[in-house]
Image 1 (cartoon, rainbow, N blue to C red):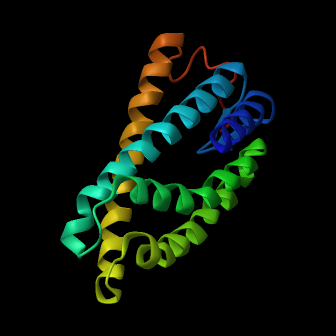
Image 2 (image 1 turned 180 degrees about the horizontal axis):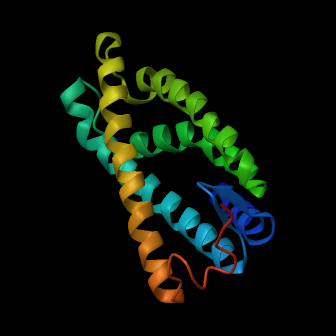
Length: 168
């Protein structure tokens, strides 16, 4: 449900409000659809892949290898970011919503001990390696999904996005 809320906020934010970045104004239904679909699918795929990656890394850090507990940890720690995605309803505030993820990192750290039985001396390493891997996974997934959505809807970078224009 939180993935849907973020997707709806992205659709409203980019479809009706828009955002100016690097002298380009991104607004219109094309941008709204692209951002909503990419957000929703990226969140679902990222949570699933994160669960498997965290579980695969578990034994390297003396943690319990248990897919259900890995899923609990991932969902537990992603919740603040998914709530922060609501701020995408005003695209200029989306960076603030992204900062909610910092609290998610803290929750991840707290959850490593009780959920994954990670030894105290290996928690920081497990957290850092997991975050690096998961950030790369998320950005790759988002880039691939954006390319697919743009190809499906026939929206080139400077045309068809329903409002991309140079303001410089």
